[in-house]
Image (cartoon, helix red, strand yellow):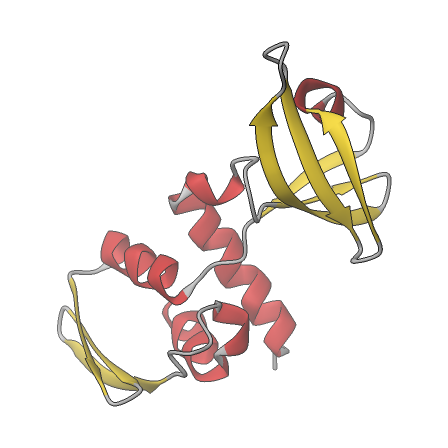
Length: 141
C-alpha cells in the first residue's frame, strides 16, 4: 500500500505534466539547488532590467540571485508549485468531463459516468492538506 507522500508525488507529477504553469519559476515555485530546497518569494526586474529572484532556503534564510545565474547553477532542479484544490479540479477536467458543486465544506464531483462526494476542507487550499482528495485522485491514475 502506498503512503500519502507517495500518492501525493504521483498525483503532483501528473498534474504538473498537464498544467506546466505549475513548474514556471515564479512566486511559490519550489526548487532544489545543491541539495537545498527553496521557495521563490518574488521575481522582479532591477533598475538595469535584469530579472532577479528572491527566495527562502529550507525556511532558514533568504537570498537574492539574478534569474539566469540561478537557473544555470549546477544541481538546479525545479520542483514546481504545490497543487491547490483548483489545480486538481482543472486537471480532472482535462481527463474527464467534470462537474462540481460545493456544498457546506464538501465538493460533489461528477465525472462522466462516475459520481462521488469528496470531503475536503475548503479552508486548506493545498492538495497536500486534503487526504480524502489525495486518495480519490490517486484512485483515478
